[in-house]
Length: 85
Image 1 (tube, rainbow, N blue to C red):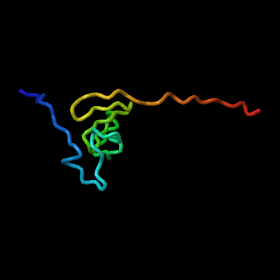
Image 2: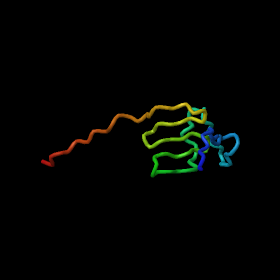
Image 3: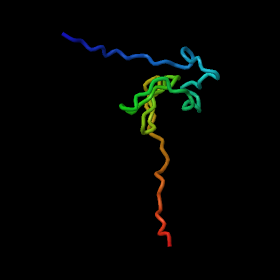
Image 4: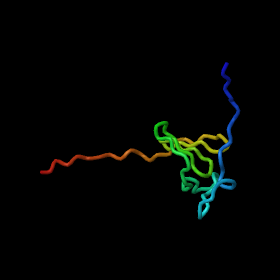
Protein backbone atom coordinates (compact mmCIF):
# COMPACT_ATOMS: atom_id res chain seq x y z
CA UNK A 1 0.00 0.00 0.00
CA UNK A 2 1.33 3.43 -0.96
CA UNK A 3 0.77 6.52 1.14
CA UNK A 4 0.92 10.14 0.09
CA UNK A 5 2.32 12.82 2.38
CA UNK A 6 0.08 15.88 2.08
CA UNK A 7 1.90 17.93 4.70
CA UNK A 8 2.90 21.37 3.46
CA UNK A 9 6.51 21.67 2.43
CA UNK A 10 8.58 24.66 3.35
CA UNK A 11 10.39 26.62 0.70
CA UNK A 12 13.67 28.43 1.12
CA UNK A 13 13.82 32.10 1.99
CA UNK A 14 16.61 34.59 1.45
CA UNK A 15 17.46 34.72 5.15
CA UNK A 16 18.40 31.05 5.42
CA UNK A 17 19.64 29.83 2.07
CA UNK A 18 20.88 32.72 -0.07
CA UNK A 19 24.63 32.66 -0.50
CA UNK A 20 24.62 35.01 -3.48
CA UNK A 21 26.55 38.28 -3.37
CA UNK A 22 24.79 40.63 -3.19
CA UNK A 23 22.11 38.76 -1.29
CA UNK A 24 18.85 38.19 -3.15
CA UNK A 25 15.94 40.42 -2.12
CA UNK A 26 13.44 38.95 0.34
CA UNK A 27 10.06 37.75 -0.88
CA UNK A 28 8.44 40.78 0.80
CA UNK A 29 10.73 43.27 -0.97
CA UNK A 30 9.45 45.42 -3.83
CA UNK A 31 12.19 44.00 -6.07
CA UNK A 32 11.63 40.35 -5.06
CA UNK A 33 11.56 39.37 -8.75
CA UNK A 34 15.30 40.11 -8.90
CA UNK A 35 16.09 37.01 -6.80
CA UNK A 36 17.97 34.31 -8.67
CA UNK A 37 16.24 31.18 -9.91
CA UNK A 38 17.47 28.11 -8.03
CA UNK A 39 15.18 25.49 -9.61
CA UNK A 40 13.59 25.66 -13.04
CA UNK A 41 10.87 23.39 -14.42
CA UNK A 42 9.97 24.86 -17.83
CA UNK A 43 8.16 21.68 -18.81
CA UNK A 44 5.76 22.37 -15.93
CA UNK A 45 5.74 26.15 -16.32
CA UNK A 46 7.29 27.29 -13.04
CA UNK A 47 10.56 28.24 -11.36
CA UNK A 48 11.66 28.64 -7.74
CA UNK A 49 13.52 31.78 -6.78
CA UNK A 50 16.14 31.93 -4.04
CA UNK A 51 13.74 33.88 -1.79
CA UNK A 52 11.14 31.11 -1.83
CA UNK A 53 8.82 32.70 -4.41
CA UNK A 54 7.48 30.36 -7.09
CA UNK A 55 7.04 32.19 -10.38
CA UNK A 56 4.85 30.81 -13.17
CA UNK A 57 5.21 31.27 -16.93
CA UNK A 58 2.11 33.49 -17.00
CA UNK A 59 3.90 35.85 -14.50
CA UNK A 60 1.70 34.79 -11.60
CA UNK A 61 3.49 33.99 -8.35
CA UNK A 62 3.06 31.94 -5.22
CA UNK A 63 4.63 33.60 -2.20
CA UNK A 64 6.39 31.60 0.56
CA UNK A 65 3.32 32.02 2.81
CA UNK A 66 1.24 30.37 0.01
CA UNK A 67 -0.53 33.62 -0.91
CA UNK A 68 -1.08 33.92 -4.67
CA UNK A 69 -0.13 36.91 -6.82
CA UNK A 70 -2.16 37.31 -10.00
CA UNK A 71 -0.34 37.44 -13.33
CA UNK A 72 0.91 40.95 -14.02
CA UNK A 73 1.75 41.03 -17.68
CA UNK A 74 1.35 44.23 -19.64
CA UNK A 75 -1.06 44.49 -22.54
CA UNK A 76 -0.25 42.52 -25.66
CA UNK A 77 1.80 44.35 -28.23
CA UNK A 78 0.04 44.93 -31.51
CA UNK A 79 2.01 44.35 -34.65
CA UNK A 80 1.18 46.32 -37.76
CA UNK A 81 2.09 45.00 -41.17
CA UNK A 82 3.35 47.64 -43.57
CA UNK A 83 2.42 47.33 -47.21
CA UNK A 84 5.92 48.27 -48.38
CA UNK A 85 4.56 50.65 -50.99
